[in-house]
Length: 245
Image (cartoon, rainbow, N blue to C red; front, side, top):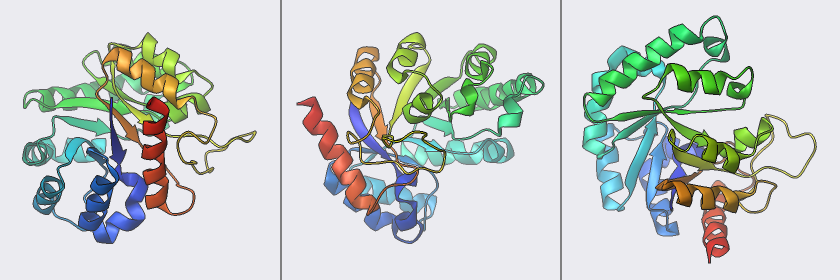
């Protein structure tokens, strides 16, 4: 498994200094990035920035509203970036309620088919609410061609074992988000994420299971880093590599 970085983690820097931040990320040793917007760059400038730094664009988080409005735009951008995956980062919980999930699935399936016709695979990134009322399993059943990016932090937050869930859905999960959890009770939605390997998530069990499944990328992400964000992501990668030795 290679390690990439979800650039949302560094959004306070990328809003004004995306090119410089990408350079710093590459210098740390990350070989791939997942995008959540382009910061202060145009799509074409982003293409040049990732090429200069030898970075692979693993995926981009793009809202379903944007994909509904102009999927062709994102297909063109993906082609320029050499990217074959787009990921839905968030769904309003009400859209996955018992009354609405079938209509939502139809919408997702429509986007998926449009992207697939151009060689782009669509995946879905979870939070914790998808594990209420079997929404995650229902979404999988209703969207048979949809793949999944498992945010392992929110799986643990919801009370499940991330590695076990990966094994259960080995044919559907294609990427994982790696983030750690504070050692406190209770953990809340507002709590920050500590540096990887310093909290309560069994990160290496996730990495080992990902290797068994052939998942190519483990993506480091912190919704809210503690301290200096650049140092947090640098130490997270260093800790991961040390633990794998």
